[in-house]
Length: 399
Image (cartoon, rainbow, N blue to C red):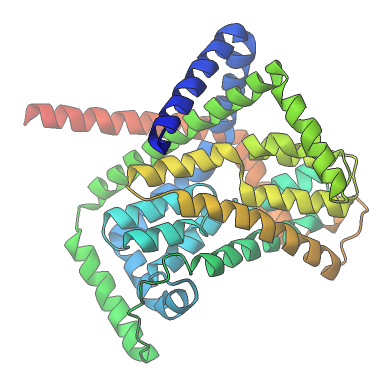
């Protein structure tokens, strides 16, 4: 029996089994789906929407082309991707999941990346939002703002490590990069930016409307995945399978020399990152061990986020295998980096939020504001989205 048939049978059995569990445990399924959509409505949508729209506009204005030309001397030798990969790297770092996959797919569809470059780039541009690292994870889950710098550095170092490893993906393909003087590179970069903007020229209103539509469509897909995986996890809890997996993971963690209680705390994060990091933060284990495990989960990012990125990449015709391999390396490298950084930065086990950095406080105030106004922001944007679609439909009908 070939692999294709096995995959078909497994997918059919999995979908049929999920439907059966939904019928068997309707309250748990409905409650979990509602909680997932509530998370998307209040936090995910308002946090990601501005970055998605901004990235679309920057592509339209030619900023990506400018950044690509300027970052070519760094990105090509280190990671074997074009300079525009640096733009994806930076925007993914600030935007959070799954912005890196989305921008990679967009640039591949515009033929600014080859397939191998897109697959390589997608493996190390998958980041957690800085607000989540500093404010949510460090302050709200671990109650120690000084840990934010540990989580952030471990997370970023881990992804850079992934990029250095994945540069050997399809290493038989040679790079055509040639070094040039900085002045000529700068002049060429600005010239390319202008030419790119003129080539894709649209009125600003049209460009803004396209950016809103593309961003909301992607976020709607993300909301569906969050609700789906929240429901699947709760259904597995109802069947007792999670408890069985938790027992096995506890034994494995104990053999590795860590506190056994980290096993049940880490397992939810395999499915949904936010739940997992919250459970680890509250686990009865030494702080250093909890930081290491949380950093590993932040690198792995959970099946829910992985599915979002895989869906975006697959729709563009990009293989998701390098991305998934990158998540395993990211979890390993981030955990090792957190272990080293914890000792270097001399983080104490005293849970004290007064040690917050000024940046953490600023990020916290922004996050709190977004959380308070999140539902209003989401409703307003969806209303604008509906109005744009309605107007364009009416114009098309009149024509």
